[in-house]
Image 1 (cartoon, rainbow, N blue to C red):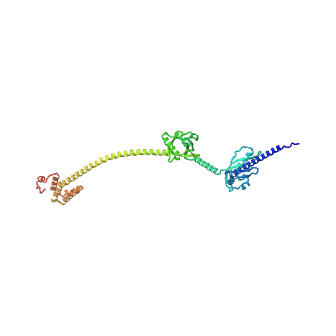
Image 2: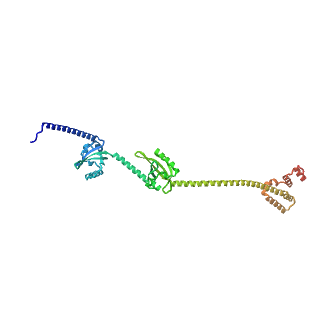
Image 3: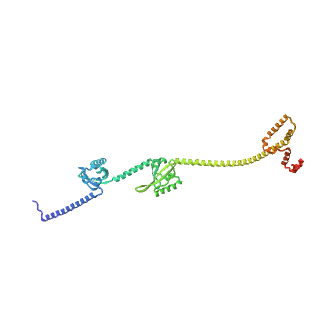
Length: 425
């Protein structure tokens, strides 16, 4: 027969039960408090939180943020299968992850899914899973979701921008290069590499100073400081660049500051090969110099010719003067000769003709005398027009007096020579 408990034992047992009851109530209160805090966090959390039952595929709990993300009410979401919210591509990703979980494979807790909103638009959610097991069976998950749509748009825009930049960088007909603030090359596009003869790996071991002559370094570093201070280079710079094979090319370049994570990072430069243009300018300058020399020589030659022409002109003027003097003298001699001829005719021939006219001549003789007088007049006609008016009508005595006057004789002297009175002379 079982031994009955004593009063003291019963009293002790009652006391223990009371303590257990108080402890249980405390645990229940703490559990209710914990559940209340969980519900508060669940409901007011800025991130989306939902619970899903993998056995039914249903959403069993959702917070306000999930409703705001999706545009559905809580009742609408709780009546839906979670997978129905996913886009086709995200469904494939979800089923693939689930298959790996069931196979016991390790998968990352974080994943991104695209879901359809109530209005048919798409948003992206970054998912962090806390899987729920019953024993060894996976039965559900508590999920924290963050809307990353805007972030993805920014990333997509950044990716597109980087692709456009890379496309421009790689395919530009100009030379594009990047170097740090000390002038060490970081990158260069294919056109720049082809121009200089370096590979992409080889260019990163160079400093731009190694490509320049010493007389260009000061200008280059001044331009570098200007870009760092102002952010952009206002004017083009011209450099003579040494290629890998030792040849030289001429380029025009302009640089600007580029940033990384909001901080100045390096300098990007754009350069254009102007070697052919430079050579054409130099050739043109050479031709110009040659033309200048030819013009100077021609000017000197013309000056010499002008000087010689001046001398010849003076000589010609002197010759002309001499010719004029000679011509004048000739005319004077001619006039004097004509005067003598006329005077001789008047003194020697005309008196005879006049004498014959005073004699009795037959008709034949008269005719010959007329012909003689006419022919004589024709002979002296070239010079008789000027002198004839002066001398042709003078008498023989008048011609004698005229000759004495021309010889410088005075009236008295002529009268004595001709035995005539001075009044008659």
